[in-house]
Length: 121
Image 1 (cartoon, rainbow, N blue to C red):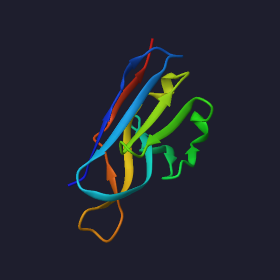
Image 2: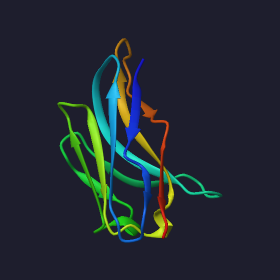
Image 3: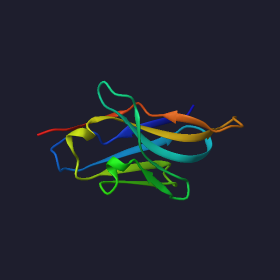
Image 4: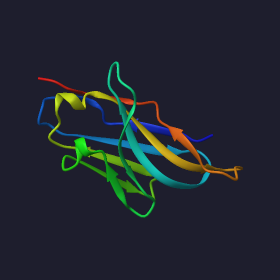
């Protein structure tokens, strides 16, 4: 069984910073892309950022220049450094990873449980 566990959310003032982490555990052969999505109240879940296994990073336009995604392949962990946070960044942030689990011939999407980020004064 593969699990993704997020941490690092919280309450921060506008202009502040937070760093989210998401670690994969369990039995698996490989992890391809890892990324972050978010869902604000009353809205659909949206893509935020993704990083490939060799470090290629992509962002939604609204976070470019403010958020930085990175990963530590040795730790099976992905990070999201969020700077210059705005109230509109308030959402539950979910980690997603493309993982080939042990005993499986295919790669599937796995999701974390989500971590709340609230930007408010």
